[in-house]
Amino acid sequence: MNIWVAFGALIVGVIVWFFLIKHFSTRSWERHGSSVHLRHARGDVGEVSIPPARIALWVFLAVITSLFGLFISAYFIRMGHGHGTAHGISDWHPISKPPILWFNTMMLVLSSAAMQAARRAVKLNQRERVSAYLFAGGAFAVLFLAGQLVAWHRLTDSGYGLTSGPASAFFYVLTGVHGLHLLGGLGVWLKTAARIRARATELIAVRLSIELCTVYWHYLLLVWLVMFALLLST
Image (tube, rainbow, N blue to C red; front, side, top):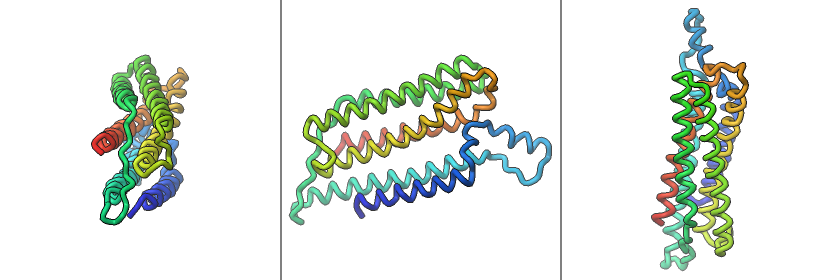
């Protein structure tokens, strides 16, 4: 098992997610699932009570959990192999972690908290607070991504490039894949924020979208905390 297994898992995950999008239609992220419940109230037969978008999200989270699990497993295996002087290999040299990673972590925590506040404000039908908290959640997430780019730049300035060693390569891969997932979430966040700014849109119409974005943000925060602890401890 090596890093190429993890890359293969990434490709499989993308393919699975593509078919999930076609099957469940990701437009459900931008609509509230109340229409499903309304059809139940009218007594329609064959409808499910769980919005397809929620099912798609949980399946997707299961896929990327497997992906990050493979990356972390490959990280430990490669680190141990790189320390294996008995095999004539000793190329694992820990890198200095840029202090800005602490700032980035705080930005992601604040982003997740703001998204949770927006979710709560939707339930209380507080439109202005929903808009403010949602904007804050996205802004903090953008600051996190910008901070990650700064961390990359500082590493390269210190001589730790992508090809300078396995430890630095794993750092770029782990943070890069996590950043790409957050960037994808920002695409949905942007559509939701635009709909809220349109006064003609009722809050109930974006409730599901905000709920799923919040779950996704919490998940990416958890993944980052695990990865950050791993990088610091090794």
